[in-house]
Length: 323
Image (cartoon, rainbow, N blue to C red):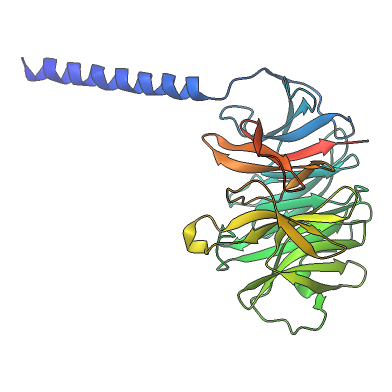
């Protein structure tokens, strides 16, 4: 066999292998009906989330009926992190330019832009107060994982009505404690337009804190509680609790804290969840776990019973739209 013929055969085989690999990837992509249309943040009975399927709709906000989670309605808006409440959304996304930049964009119920704030780092967490007025967002300034504590974050709070902006919670006083240079905040969740809960890290330890925007201060409620999310009735917080060393790669387990007693219990999800959990309803929480295409959404009862179940493939940042 001549050298030329051998080269042609080898090149043809390589092409066939590439085609086969491409077909394999395409057939592995999560299937499901999807169509561009109108996504609204004030349409009860919908779950709005980020689509993580590869292709032209990746990171776009989409909605599905909560009852059957069928056809995805795809919007023209894309986000890296997303949250919403009472018809107001916060979308953390990249901005065009010669150097990497990220913005926090306030959206109305029809996903139209209302305000915009330039962010000092890479988006990681976002939340909106129950009334839709206040928005909080956290970015990584250095580092890109909550597994250890060798990272730096900035967490800001924006009044979407007046435009008043707190660029960093690190300027807040900490009741009964002296702040150190390594202080970090992340994972805000709102009780109302003034009161909030968040994670504070200092001196190598994490703390659950409560605070007020008007008082410009926080106080520690307990240790070892990260990325809290307040229940719809305001009585419980679901959070990540460190139960193993960061070196394990699986440091957290989801727990729910009763705010009246400050006692917590583990949920039935035993895998490590690195997410700020969302409440689908008063008895169920949802969260993202890594998957072949970004992440899948799972849910589990909030009382420690039952078992986790996958509710959506290739999805993240869920918001259950309620009345």
